[in-house]
Length: 186
Image (tube, rainbow, N blue to C red; front, side, top):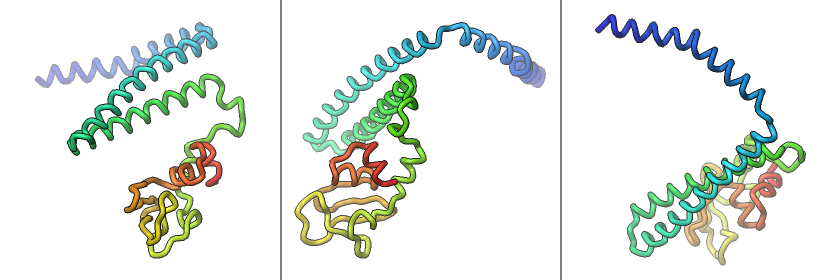
């Protein structure tokens, strides 16, 4: 038993010290030999096909989610809601990679960074809406008594059910795109 473990450890060491560096070197050589424009086009085509598949799954999930809500199957609806969020994030990630492949940084001022998004999310709600003791009048429905609760820089309305961070708030209130909302919060 000890001998077989020692042999496995020795084999692993050989792989990481001799084989893996040689493989990495060969991959780099192949990468340099491939036309980069062709590689970008192929990667973009692959990403678009992947995104189309995910969007198809999203439509099915949305249909299932509506069905679960209609039949009052709360747990199934919550699970599909979580799956929907994951798929939307995947689509956004793929879109960002396509944007980068097309030379997204060639148009300065259009792209926003993760740091910009983080700073926009940290923008205080109190500068967007009048808040008293954590409550405010909801701008998304006719509200006479404060029903919009703010905690940890996230908002939730007990009246209409709206919820989100400062970016979502500005997008909904001012009918702005995600990028425009982030820029307005910086």
